[in-house]
Amino acid sequence: MRKIVLGFIFCIATGTVSAQDTVSAAYRFTLEDCLNYAFGNNYNLQSLKLTEEAREDAFAQSKKEQLPSLDASLSESLNHSKGSDASFSGSYGLNTSVILYQGGNITNTIEQNKLRKAQSSFQTSQYENNLTIQILQAFLTVLGNEELLKYQEAVITASEEQLKQGKEQFQFGKILESDYLLLEAQYASDKNNALNTQISRDNSLVTLKSLLSLPITSTFQIIHPDTASIQGMSLLPSVEDVLERSIQSLPDLKISRYNIDIAKIGLKMSKANYLPTVSLRGSIGTGHTAYDNFGNQLSNRLNEQIGVSLSVPIYDNSRTKSKVTQSRIALQQAELDKKQSELDIQQTVVTEYQSVVSAYNKYQTTHVRQNAYSKTFDVYRAQFHAGAITAVDLLQQQNNYISALNDYIQSKYEFMLKRKVLDVYMGNRVEL
Image (cartoon, rainbow, N blue to C red; front, side, top):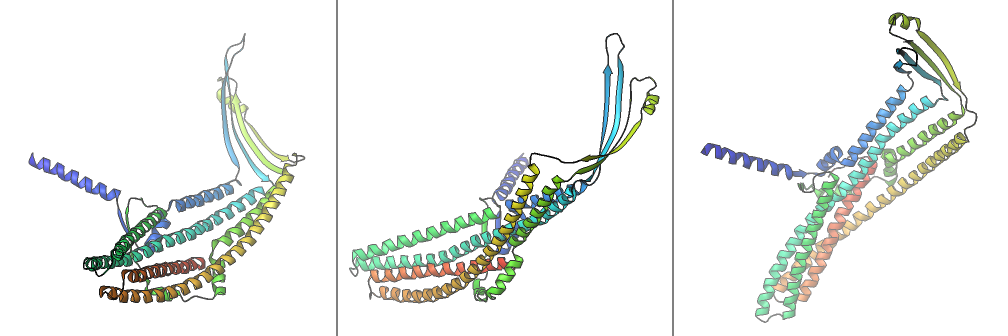
């Protein structure tokens, strides 16, 4: 009995642990891990891949439209009228037909579906680029917040020491009560700043998990990269080189070109409605009027038929004319969209390039400023402990340091984000 009870408890405990592991799975990802996981699991991306499969199937089906169709028919009837006995009758047949000429519509449909199938892969690539940029932004925001949080925790420690020192000085009458209250307020403000940074970090982690299509309740941590390579990121190719490589790499222009080709075929298909349709049809059938001599009846009634039909459009209430006009407008619109897409890409890439240069200069400036205020703050802290300056002087320098620190961390990760976005545009591997 004791063994049974222990076994039951063990099963419950094991099941509980297993269930907890399932509900709150733990993930520790680098940026590369995030991208790889997202490309395999993001729901929107999976939906686009299903669209690729659907267009592949549509292309395969359009090629089968060149083949003849075949159908069978079978009927059995019971006939009865006043003054005659009931009798059975039936008919059986096979029918086939194939379109010989339809103004090239079948061939054009095949070509159009082929283009749409190829275009869908570039639409998927376009979304992958956007997804990469979103993951970069969320990942680097988490990094920036966690780095800022480390500094803020150090500032909290310093504020706590200053508050203790200030309390002793106030008790001995070395500082005014107002100075002590300022130190107390600064300590509370520093803790609030750290809490806000934690919330911002957690929100970015939620965003990142959503982009990866992970459960929001899952335990997720990022593996910090070596950001010492930030200097290497400052080595930029020329703006002309970046522009040329982006135009070759980005799928946006390829999508626009496919839209033009698809619209051209659509115009051909609209004009084909002016042309006649030629079809070939054939059938074979037999039947019976009773079940007596059933086999002989089927043999005697066997019939074959083959024929060609011609359908010539004469007047369709100008529907074809309207379709041709709309198809021609659609083609012109696709051509304009391509030109606009070219301009948009050029503007975006050149603007982003200049933003990278500006972000790097800002990063260098804030780095120098942060170092200067950090050292100044250390000096003022020592002077405050020695009683050489007031709490007002100390807190002013502390706030200057915190402001410079925020600017430095923000500019650092802003530069990294903008630089990596350029890599996405140029088709380079995105890694940290």
